[in-house]
Image: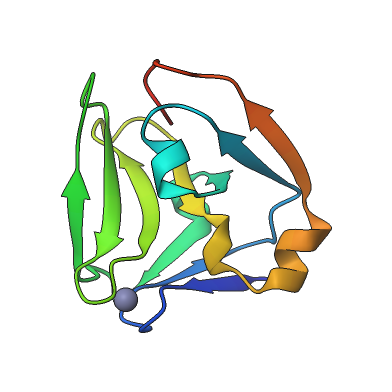
Length: 117
Ligand SMILES: [Zn+2]
């Protein structure tokens, strides 16, 4: 069953084919500041609404990944691979309903001072 993630103002919505079984908390210098939990998907499993949502992006370090946030409310919504051949993206699972998040197993990624994603 699909689930929907939305930023606070609703300008950016992401429909996921399935609820995440696991969510990942990363302690790299960027993710710990964002305070996000990542759910990883193939871009083919994610529908952006609208197709080109109003986001601004931030790239750092290897610049392999663009971190998107809503230009209106500021919520971090997802990251996308700069290389379109990479079949992976990260959704900020904190934008999901709390009950969906609680049902997912929490994983911890130790990437202090290393690139995130
Ligand atoms: Zn927003």
